[in-house]
Image 1 (cartoon, one colour):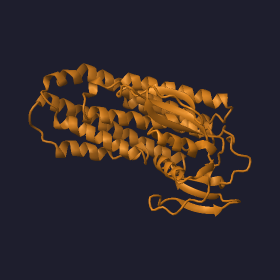
Image 2 (image 1 turned 45 degrees about the horizontal axis):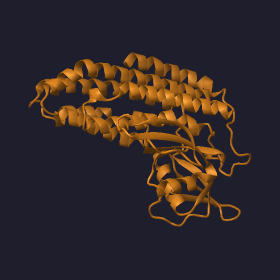
Image 3 (image 1 turned 135 degrees about the vertical axis):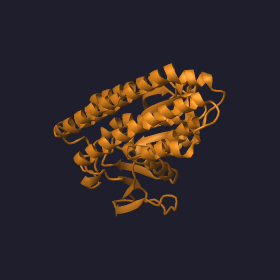
Length: 349
């Protein structure tokens, strides 16, 4: 697995430089109100979905192995869902005639292939080896519980930080320092130690390589998103990172809010204040949103369903991915909140 990933990373680091130079200006409003440093291409709201699926999938994995055997996790189902979702957002960029952003597509291909390889190897190992030691064990071992703990901690981290910043060295040290080396179910115990040690060592090496390449090619991304909203939001201690930049004609304002995971919480809180959005990251066309809903739920205006996939470890629940007009985002969030629908993520370019 490590040599496959190494080759893929090298392809990304060298090819992305050339490919990115081919990309022109993305589709944005004719005169965006946000400053140029805050403007991001509208295609980004679609293309960030595959990246975030690689947050959703590890989250599902961590929750699953906390209660069930990792050998039963639907690894190949998640591989299929990644590529199905990428196909859906790729087709939507073509249908809308958006900037194709080849460098970003290349990055998606790399993370998709490396994750597919990882999941395939995990599936094979857990099926051939993991199930044997599961059968020999009368109860979960400390190593089983530790694996779930690290998996959940990893997901909490990558919701706000790049995955390659995660301290896999610390996870490996804790495995050998904090857990007893003897005890019941020794076969399962030491098999898990071998599996987790191998995984953390590989991820440590891969993360260092990715971090080195990323820092050498890309500038650090702004951690905030510029938003035009109206009316001006009230002072709210629960939104400490909301910063007003300028007053605009009428009762509108230009402000920044945190990007990535926190953007979803801030957008929901602002919508509940009765605030609507006129522009996000320089875009006023549409934004991608995912919600978790019962199987019987159907999307209604103002959101248009792009695709839906079942949550494989939660029968009866599905992820619905919708395109929502920027100016209707607040209304959609309030509508979903009124029916207790969980907004999973707003893909803020």
